Each structure stands twice: as C-alpha cells, then as structure tokens.
Image (cartoon, rainbow, N blue to C red; front, side, top):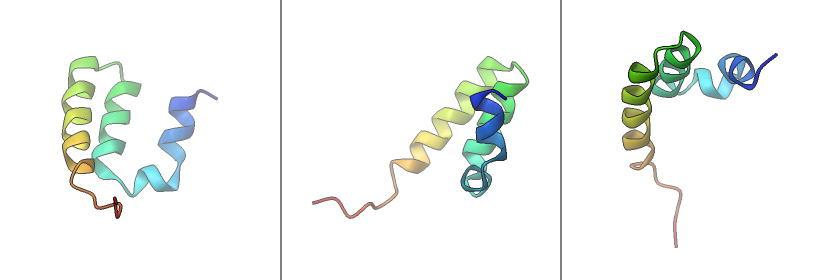
Amino acid sequence: MSLLDKLLQDLIVSDLPRLHTALLAKDRGLRKVWLVHMDRFNEEANTWNFGRL
C-alpha cells in the first residue's frame, strides 16, 4: 500500500476536506488540479491558530 493510499484512508485526513480533495486529485494523476487544491489547503492551514509564542 502506498503512502498516498494510507493518507486517503486516514481519519484525520478525512476531517480535512481540502487536503482530502487534493490527495484524491493526486491519486487520479491530476497534477494541476492537485496543485490548485494544495494551494487552497495551505492558505487554510496558514489561518489555523497553534498558540504560537
């Protein structure tokens, strides 16, 4: 089983719809679509508050 397959089955990834959509595109070989979705996921992740000092 590939890392991509493991990530697609991971419950945490399922709770992150933008990441899950990006990984599905990657799995289907849709590189340009994957890059668009990863960019959107990165934008979303940058807004998360991790309690930085």
